[in-house]
Structure formats: structure tokens, C-alpha cells
Image 1 (cartoon, one colour):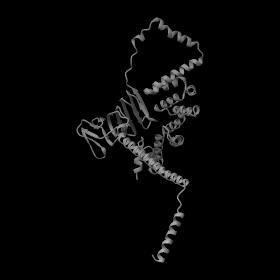
Image 2 (cartoon, helix red, strand yellow):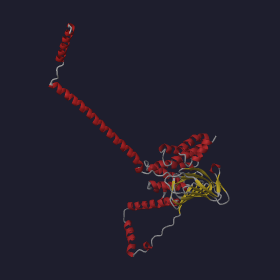
Image 3 (cartoon, helix red, strand yellow):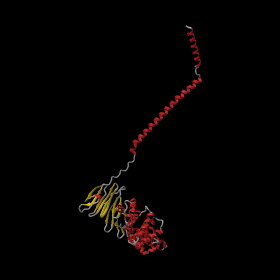
Length: 428
């Protein structure tokens, strides 16, 4: 071995010993600290794994519930009511429908229309009419002249209309006949079953008819009559053969009433009059009301009549062409019952009374304007606006009435004066 090789070997041994001295073995404390650190890292990893696993299981469960709900909803959902099929004309007998809906009669047997849901229109021989519209919820017939009968299948979803001159008959399900004579300006409606509502001039408001009632309106005479053709039900025989003991009871009652105070007698008379007038109104027996007032005196009657009785008197006077008496009854209504709904109605009816008087058109227009300002959506709003349109047309011509016609069509497109308003809107 050379000197240099020996020297190198000694140096290498010295470095080795130096390295051994520098890399001292870890102490017990250091080993324990490191072990705890390793365990903490391992436990954190396990915790994250468990949380991830739980979240994954929960998400899977939620997705399964949503899928199950989607699958079961159609089974448990309440079935929606089936929509009614559209109304269409399925058959025309005795005639044909021309352009514009005009019903042309072939032969002399009249024309009948049968609709898809069972309703039927029958025009008697010589009757002229037009099928204006047929929609999903019914149809509208315009009766130009003659007699037409109707059998309407009841349905809460459908509405049917019959136009007869300036009158409109609206119905849901019923059986009735309409007669319109344009020459005499006379309307007749006979109701056999169901319910109809009639609106138009002279009526003042929408009039509801009951089964068995007949309505007759004459525009020239400004007369409305309602009659009831239902047979009277006879009283049971037992009630007509009362025993002597029972027969004496009414006598005692009358005797005791005779000694009662006059206020009680007046109240009984008022109840009796109210019941009597209610029956007279239902049957259109206006003369019975006028006869009672004539017997008791107008000045004595007006302060004692109820609100309903004042209106019944006003109607009776208007229909029998006694405008001054009608005017007095309506003014009394406004004075005695100023806060009632009838007070506004009286304003409109005063307009009708003024219109029937010579030179009363200006006063009538003021009443109609007053009513529309007080009750723009009231019972008589359509009628008031329609009458205003007619009067303005007579005074100022079509140009002056056209804005009123436009307003009428916007607010009451199916009202009694809609046809007149459309004619004004189209006029040059």
C-alpha cells in the first residue's frame, strides 16, 4: 500500500465515524410523537372515507325516492274532469243553413236543428231566423219573425241565447217557446220547465221566469204582462169540513183582533197588502196594485209603503202608462230610502219615466248619466247606457252616438243593445 492509499483510508474512516456521530438515533419521545402523527393521518383518512360513503348512500336513497314518486304520481293523481265536447250542429231537418247563418226553409214544415249534445231548435213554418254563432259552450239564434221552440240540454258549462228584436233570452237548460212579431213589436216567452232570463226595453231589468209562466211585452204600449198557467192545487177536502170546535177558533181570533190597538191592525193590513202585491207582481196583475192605491188614496199610501211596495207600484204605473204616478212612487223611494240599493235603481227608472213623457228626453238623459255615475256596474248599467245611446243618436245623429256605441260594445258585448251598437259602429 502506498502512502497515499493509507492516507485516503484513514480519511474515509474518520468521515464514517463523523457521520455516525451526526445521525444520532431518535429518542423515545420523538418516536412516540411520530407514531401519534401517523395514527392521526390514518384516522383522518378513514373518517373522510366514512363521510363520503354515507353521503353517497344518502344521495342514492334520495334519487330512488324521487324516481318512485315520479312513477306513482300518475296512479294517485285525482282524475281531471273530462272536458265537454264542442257543440256542433249534427242535423238540419226541413231546411238548410245558408251563408251568414240564415235558416232557409224547404217546403212548409218548418226547420229544426239538432245539436251534438242533444239540444234542439224548432222553427215553426214561416218563421225566419239566423244561427248567429255556434261555439264550444252553446249557440245563439236570432229570431227575425215568428215562433221558435227550444229544448236545451241542462249543463253548467254551456250558455244559449235567443235574440228577438231588441230582447235577449239567456238560458242554460230548459224548454221554452219564443214568439216575436216585429210589426206589432210584441214579444212572448212561454216557459215550460227550467229557468230563463229575459232582458230588453220596457222590462227595466233582467226578468227571471219560473216554470209555467208566460211573459208578453208590447213595446208600442210599453206594457209587460206575466201570467201563470200552472193549475191551482185544490185544498184538501178535510180542510173544508172542519168540526164546529175548529170553526169557532177563527171567530175568536177575529174578535180579539177587533179589540187590539189600531197599530196592530195597521201592521196586519200592511203584511196582507205586501203578500197580495207580491202575488200580483208574480202574475203581472198590475191593476190589482193600482186598485189598492186608488182605494186608499195616493197621498195616504206613499208614506206607508215599503221599499219593495213602492217599486211594485212604480212598475204597475209604468206598465199601465201612468207616468205621473210612477214618478211619484220613485221620488218617494229616493226620499224615504236614500241609502238603499233601490235608491240608485229609482234613478234609472225615473229616466224611463221621463223618456215616456212628451219632451222628457233631456231629463231622461240626465237621469241615465246620474245612474251610470252612481252605479257603473249596477243592475241597470247596460240598459242605461243603451238608452243613452239611442237618445243621443236621435238628438245628435250617428256621429254623436258612435262613442257611446263603442263603449257599450266594450262593456256589454252581449247586451240587449249590442246589435244597435254594432250598426252604429259600422255606419259611415
